[in-house]
Image (cartoon, rainbow, N blue to C red; front, side, top):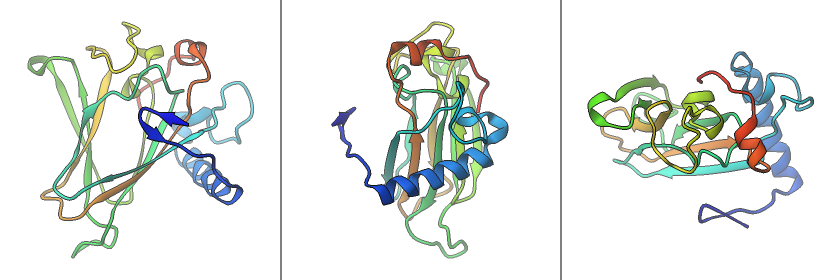
Length: 188
């Protein structure tokens, strides 16, 4: 099947179990944020089970520009683990990076927050930081800009001499009611 021009395949049982292990660890570590319904196994009305895995490679000397994910496509909670492709002189996990969050559609009034992270870090986006339709005061869909939701991107610390790899877990919205009517959450 296709999603935003990317090919996707079902996971075999071994890969599905690895994904469940990563999900469980992220769910436990980020329990205070309520990621995917909290630390408990995926059961109950608030539980969300990630069903989309994205692997991204950003080549050396590049970054990920600030953007909205497709606002009406995902359920609450996006979790990303990131690391460098190769070790660097002072760090086996590679180069540090920053999560760049921006609020506001116009440069003049835009607020920017850089969150420095060591290589191998994980981060979670929820609520207004995820920019989903259900938390947007204007109820924007797709990648439409607004002044109430944050965009996210990644900048590398210093000249990135090695490629950056990341693994992102998300849950696809089942239908319009999933993306529009879930409870509004806080920022992540």
